[in-house]
Length: 440
Image (tube, rainbow, N blue to C red; front, side):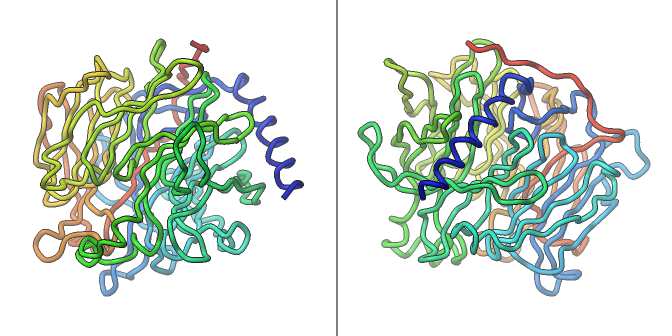
C-alpha cells in the first residue's frame, strides 16, 4: 500500500509538470479533457460511434462505426466503415489520447478496453490493442470514462469485482496500455459529507488544480432490466449521491459534495473568468452548479429543473457550449433535447426543447455549436422495447433558435446495433488552434 501511494504521488507530480507546459483546450467538442492537443475548429469529417452489438443483428458484435459527416462529401451522412471487436461486452464510452491519434473504448459488462488507431486514417480505424486484465490488476470493473492526461489515460470505473456494487475507483494507464496505478473513490467523510465510493465521470480544471468525479451505480444495477430495477426498492437505494473534489497534484480527495440522484456527466466552463462546472442528476432531474466557496472549498447547489421530475424524464448526457453560455441536455425517457441558457449559471433557464426521438441519450456538438449529433441507446437492458426501441444517430443544424434535421442513420436497418458514444475526427489531422487557460 505504501509503495502504491508513493508511486501515485510521484506520478501525479510528473503529470502536473505537463499542466503548465501543455496548453489546454477550452471547449466541449465531444471531448471533456483539457489535454487534447488538437481541436477541430472547422468542419468535422467523421463521427465515430461506439456501438453495442445485438444478437442476431448483423455480426452481433460491439463495433466502432464511422460515419461521413462532411456535407461536401459524396458519402455524407452514410456509414463508410465498421470495425467489430468480436464479442458483446456492453460497449459504452470512449476517449482520445492526448495527441488524438488513438481512441480508447470500453465495455461495461466484460470490462475489456479496446484501443483504436484513428490517426493514421480516420476513415478506417484499426484495432491495435485489447486490454483484458483491468479487473484482475485493479479489482475495478465497468470502465466508463476515458480521460486523457499528458501521455496517460485516466479511466473512471463503475463497479468492482468483489460484490459488483457501486464502490469503485480510477485506473491510470500510460498511452501504451500499461497500468501505472489505481485510486479508490472515498468512502469516509471528507468536509462533513460521507463518500459513497461510487464513480462515473471525470472532469479536470488544471488552472484550479481540481479534478471532479461524479457517481452512478454498480454492475448489479446497470446490467439489470430497467423495469425490474425500478420495482426493487433496495436496489434503488444503491445509486451515487456525491461529487468528489480531488487535488489534481496529489490525486487525493479533498472534499465530498452532496449531489443527490446520480449526478452523471460533469462539464467545466473554462473560458476566462469561468470557474464553475455543471452536472445533471438523473434520478431527481436537477441541474447542479459546482463553484468555489469560501476558504478554498467548493459548493454544489441546484440551479434548474429538467423536465417534470415527477415523470422521471431521466436526464442523461449533457454538452456545454464553447463559450460556457449554453448547455444541451438529453432526457432519455421522453426523448426530448433541451437547451439551457447559462449566461447566469446561478439561474440556468431552459429556452428551447425539441422531441428528437422515442429515446435519446448521447449528445455532441461541433466547436462552433452549429451542428449537433444525438444517439439513442443508453444500456442494453435499459433501452425501450418494441416500436420505441429506435436505434439511430441523428444530426441536426442549430442556428441559435431551432434544430433542423441534417441526416440520420438507422442502426437497426443497417444491422449495426445500438449506437452510444460519439467522437469526431478530421482528414489530415485536426487544426492546431489552441486556447490556453491562464490561472484565474
